[in-house]
Length: 584
Image (cartoon, rainbow, N blue to C red; front, side, top):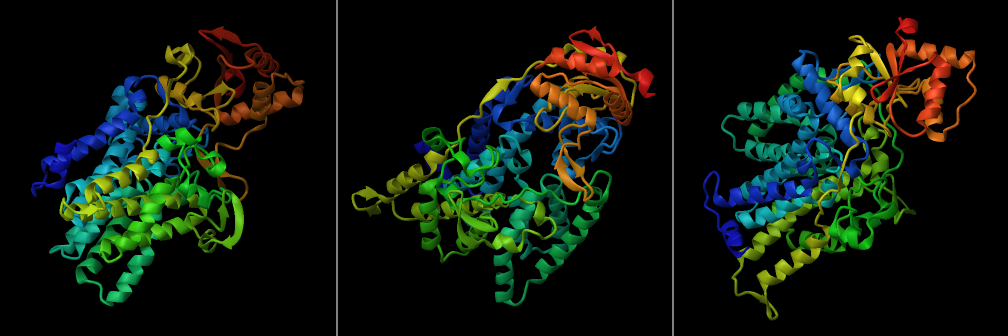
């Protein structure tokens, strides 16, 4: 450990030094350890805390891979929500990663792609922040490594990395920051602008929301700084203008599809989701401190949205560092951006431990603006992560710059600083994600029997129908080679007269009936009215077969389906109702 610290603290100033390689290797190792359960079981591993999101993202990767292989548009799919389809740009499909990784998905399956994106997202994000800190902020590789490690593995990032790769893979944000920093001295600002526009486009195609959060967090300081200088360098004006033109040209079609194309929607209403003040000093469920204290409790809406949870030690330390380092420009920028993000994350009304304190939050002024109305405001705390990481890097560099003999009382300063870092960071350090073995895909789908019962372009109706809380059918479809479409599913699409975004498809009458049987085990009276509704729904879905595989209340569901569409027949490990004679 001492040798590693010396190498990182005294780097060779080449393009890539031994210290750089060691830092990156440490980040990769840490990410692999966190996802060790997935790496051990790439064919069947499932992240417990992801709920149904692993099924969703694996389907998104598989759908885009098959679209690329078949020469179709990877930003729209008709494999879910038959017959209307799913607008993948209006979902978190990560096409900038899914499309290049399509060969991996097709060759090894989407679980491998899912594991690569999550692992590479955490390690890549830490590496990118390390590059920014070590090249633009501090000269000490060790100081940069400390700050970047926090950026890559902070509690809010780890929370989203259970299920949301679009918030785990944010490695382009520090690269964009490096591009902007160097723009002011660029000899060819147009060329830099082109690069910046391409980077911005790629970030939009990985995660728009985190880019929006970063821009809003930095914007107040950037505006103030530009006004204070009164004159923006010509290179910056030319570069930013070029980047804007390039990015607008590249994202024009994807954004049109997202906001005005088929199955687009206006916005998503989440209700108030601001962070409680108590959430900043609590510990996340995926941290060492959370294991000891019982986690966040009711301070987060679920385990993947623990968007603050920095712990008392780090909060106190960051406040102290912001005061101590206020004379340094990078520290002031970090403090301003982190402060703006923290305040915005409190939501329209500030709460303490979930109880309103009677003070309105500034988010109330922004909540109804276009784009912002769909943002979960608690996620703004994600912008506090690089701000705190920057302060940690600068402070560590300051400590390393002083004489090794410097003491605080009887304790050497460097030893004291290590103690401070341990006290602040160890309680929020992440623990490996729990992984289980997913239930095997029914033989009806995995063995290819399904192909006898559905024609190309037609639909199989699994019972109960897939929805956001029960999305295993998406995996069955993947294991069947994406050879048929599914009604309903897990996605975000338009609903209601106002076409606002909703999770899953609006349920049709027969779907509601079957869901009730699956939930209660009670077979309702079936009349000609229910039969007519079932026939109308099957024709709407373009169904060729209704399929019932093992699950709760299978006998009651079988009885209900037989009363609705006639007798079925056992096939492999499923019951199948061939409805082609009545739906064509």
